[in-house]
Image (cartoon, rainbow, N blue to C red; front, side):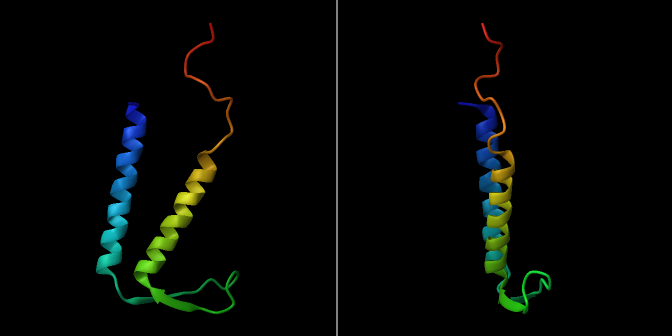
Amino acid sequence: MNAKLIFKTVFLIVVAMLLVLMGMNNKGHILLSLPPLLPHSFSQPAAIMYVGFFGLGFLSGTILTAGGGKGGGGGKPK
């Protein structure tokens, strides 16, 4: 197996575990206000906010790293 793939998988699992810990221990409501994008502030449980921000970050990272190359192996052509 590829070492880079294993490292990325372990890293993603650790980040997901931290997300679960934050969600379990921060149950209060927080106020989100984004005046340019949202006309009104809204209050949600902190755990829901963490999951939403994690999802946005994960999607952003996926979009930024996807595509953009010729692909193929790392060696020189024969």
